[in-house]
Length: 118
Image (cartoon, rainbow, N blue to C red; front, side, top):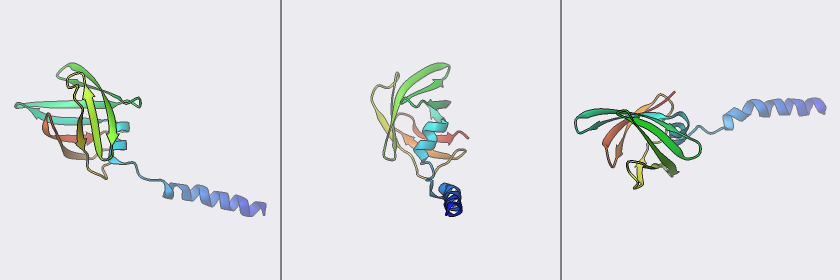
């Protein structure tokens, strides 16, 4: 009986990873951070985004530190910042993992390229 319980416990422990869900795109974005590349009035802009667990974020644009807040709303990442106090929400595609690069449309910057950090 004891042997059967130990064997059953080992099987459950080994099978547990198969039941774990993959992280969503937005979970990967907010835990790993991203680099956002945009073109702002003909000037290339690269924003390294760091998302904190307390719902705040930090980036640096052309030498200027920018802080803000973020939240997830379904498939959208919604943000406000020192530079833009009006909340903007951007739809992110499903199934993206660390290292993936993809495009989204930002209301202020237009089409941008997002790379999820590894």
